[in-house]
Image (tube, rainbow, N blue to C red; front, side, top):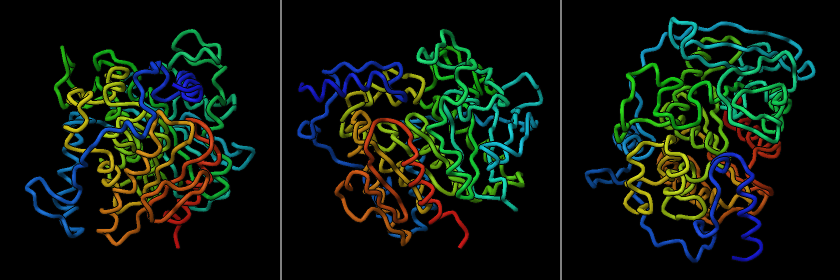
Length: 430
């Protein structure tokens, strides 16, 4: 391994997302295109009977459900039909957030009639100057809603959080040190200045990100799991996705947000989640995946960077148990992740990569988007214009969008600049 590759391996140990608790042994990761195994992709436009899919109606009425079902059975899993009683309570409201640019609310969403039962807190920003409902971005955050903005009026999450020794935290409780710790990832000022709302939820409210046999978070809404989960029982990504859909339920009756124009957004493991949420819930008007990598936008069959085996060993609670059958056996998987992206069609979808994030396989992320284009073209929409990866920091936007930017595994203001531009094209009223 050369010096550059060693440097990258060390970088991976420090980054968030699927790197947090998964030290990468150098010999386990392939970063050489010449060593990508030969593979055959499942055909998006051939149904399970072998018949070709040639019309939008055939996709929407048959093939789409087949593909969705395969992801439920073999990748993300299914959740029980949780019967919830959604209730909301306003925790705080100010009209001078973000230097006076935003109206901000904290809203607690209860899933049952019991105030002590499972719940999540929505942090909602809308432009202070808005005179009616606005389109919005909805996404999960990693450290609690107080991490979005360094404002002492925001409540600090009481949910379980990951250790973050860089912030001086030695246990699993958020502290004052977390205020504004994710501000660089959210570009709230840019978003509200552009006329959009931003809604975010701490992902640990929905399902704490550790493997305890699914006895925490929203899993308590269903039957207790005893012993091993069923092979197709939904993991944490399915749970986080479910929470995003419940947030959209709440936004349907929000006078400040246009729920018909909500883009679901996520970074890293939460980018995997945004893709799955957008696939499972067609009410989301746009889908954005930022550095989602293995299990997200990247092809599994390339076995480049993080692999199915590696992610299942490191995070056994993210996917369904059936997904483990494809550890070092990706060619047997009846789907691959171009099919996940295609489930967003004909809605606009954006995939973003970072050049230093080879662990997430930027080329595999782009190729998934390229190959999903056959379904977009079925609807008369435009996919990526070329199979070749675009130049660095040279975004391409059609009815789908992509960029690979300079830098590492992160969300930056540059990323949000592209997402806002893409949303202007597709979500703003013409």
